[in-house]
Image 1 (cartoon, rainbow, N blue to C red):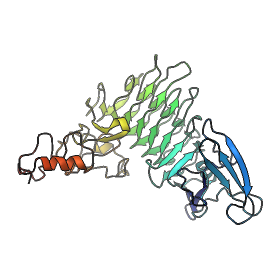
Image 2: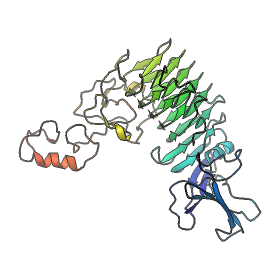
Image 3: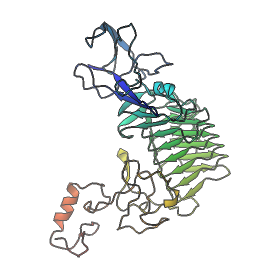
Image 4: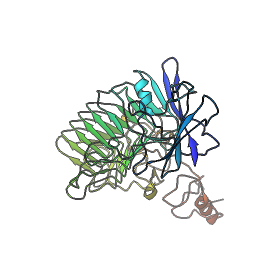
Length: 434
């Protein structure tokens, strides 16, 4: 059984608030942040569904300031620890680097316009609202290691107080929303237009807009993936598994929509559903969503330089398997022969975006792929991930994106002779592998 607690930071001038996890107590190796028992108005975190309090203990756990409080969670084996401050109150963090807040909502509550909230790697079991504040909320380690788990309780992230582009969400995996009665699983934007960058929306559920729901909103969404989200209402159908737009004009650039779905009967728009909306979709991949990719009422979505299964009218659009590296295991990076490489529009990428969802360079020229996109080379790729040309990844397609055993076998198998068909191990173009 592990003992763990959370910590956090706010730097002094333009306040930088950092949410972090402190070193676990008593030698624990806990892999998830503590679920802290505090008032919902101050630090709203809850036990996951079907979990419950197993036991409560009081004792001086850290050797200072007298009795502390420990609460055990029955099914997970985790223990939440509240440390006594010596005056009968428990530490919930103060927002400094040495004493971080315990929850993202607490940091937002205490932030003012212009602040930056930096969230340390970990899984945070909460939902939160930006409260109309023009703050930047970003992770320090990126979405692969920083998850916001909504525990099946409504929208994970909410902007409904007129947030504008200076409200920024960056670098999180948003998951486990859950309500067939409400709209906007991963994120709900109502009369708000935040900036969302480098996020993964996966495994969320809502009546409409499993991944994101936009109402009278125009968010800017860049370098994001929407996968495995669903729109299912109480009547078994829903709309917009990945994204639902009503009276909205979001700008969606270099995003990947795949594996999203709607309810079984008469729902529509597996990737995106639009009502009286004009989303601008550029440099995106919409592939493998059910029952279709985009469902549009007038006016139609403006789609350019994107890969849409089944096709979609617009300059630079294609209808071809994007050849993800390993979609069954959630790897939506591009393999070497993907038609999405060097096929997008450089002019659509926001000026301040220089990296992809992995943090790798956004503009990389694959010399083995003809440039079919728009702009001065290097031409950007479609989707959230830029193919990082690696000449030694020379096995037959699909390449793994890494230099590994199959590459060595392909090289050795052709050593001393011509290149094996389908491989790219003849790096100098001499016609022989030697």
